Length: 473
Image 1 (cartoon, rainbow, N blue to C red):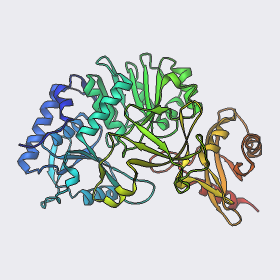
Image 2: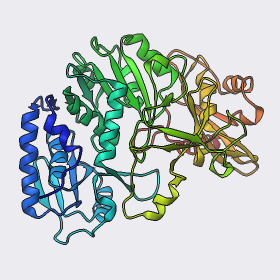
Image 3: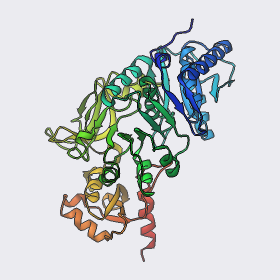
Image 4: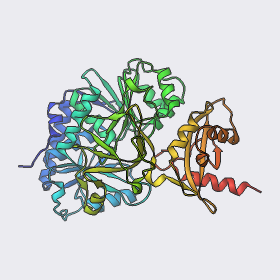
């Protein structure tokens, strides 16, 4: 008999419903039947224990049934966006050597040869692929027990109820979207999956919503498209990037009854390691809040890990120890070993502990700008610029410079109806931070440069700098 893991019990006990873009609504009984049927087909096809199975995700109820089917059949689920680029698809197929694909309620065979036996996958539930701006995707392996434990910890923090309606425009290929969906099923809440985000489409789903799970870039777009009517919304879950004071103020003004849980975490740590709760939204603004249940952390004092000073408030790399994190990267023990230090995961984020006990992210280790030998965290400069009354958004980065090694440039988006020159903004910075931290150039733009995921993209600052340099006589 195929092994089943702790996550299977979520569907066994589920009582809620799942709606999707088509307007169809699926009961928990319908999901159980669909999952059982798919699991039987996978077993008939010869799925082996702990074998990876690709799930083509389009944010439909059948996708959730597919996850449970793979787990019931003893396999390991590998979410892949149904519209993924061919290069991404090929890389994931190559790394997993998966023989089976589940898409829209059907099972397809991709290969005949079984994948290699991998002891790392014993008890695994998920392989979630993640990558930075370069390099091939990394397969993060998460187990049933650890991920189920994370759901319990999140429920203790968020307290979803069977009376909640959870609107989810996040894709199930991401750990954030997946845990929200599973927690909704676990608690009996109604789940509304949004296949493709548009401001108008999301607004149409918010009339009865009590919980919205999204990312700041979606919220900025949503609140930039006029009034947001969500009379029953009590909770907003967000993360993935900084929320920012301007967006926080917009949410508070339009939806005063909606408490914001600003979450910080990584796929490798099981997500949601820190939370700035609604109770501390004002006092803790600019921070990622405090550790969530079960999380321990350190701020490294190793200069090679981004440390920029000494003492309790010094900045250094944020290290996280969690019982809910990954057991390793797929087929990459060397990368797994370097990702940890004494049992703590190395986040790559530079942080400091504030006097109020909240933790503040001040930059990325690889983003630290070395200007004439002085180390500068871009996030610190962005915070100063965003405190200017005319500034809505800011992004800072280093640009190669013959004299300094790196010059500090910043892009700024002004608030609607506001005006401020680059010179005025540099003077604002000069009055508030050390002279060496004042940007060498500030570019006032209509929108921040963005990368493939739609997030603010620091390498785009160099393009702005090059364009400005080309225009000089």
